[in-house]
Image (cartoon, rainbow, N blue to C red; front, side):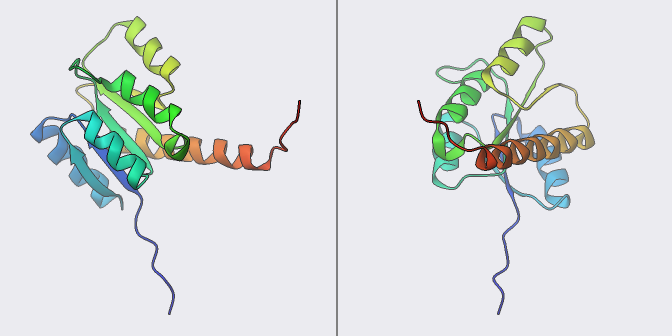
Length: 144
């Protein structure tokens, strides 16, 4: 008997109840398992324990971790550095978008955003991270 592979996971972090319901429902229809977290710290711990395919983080400037800091921490953790991170926010400042990209996020969306666009960015981020991981695994290690 063949083992069935579980669907890829997406962690929703810091979304409002309405955003979580709308985006979560749409992502589930696209074949993802979705789990929601109010706090980034809890989502990070869950991701380290069971790496998801992606994290959709709502930028809310709450101490101690916002969407940009969550992205930095994901990229710093060896076990989850290939998890796609999409930041969704109402902040329109170019400096914030640049900081998110510099931190290593795979997608940056402004609210309001359609569920279709959110799903597209999540899927694009997953594909991009998978391609990077594949390329890295085929690149011979250098010694120096």
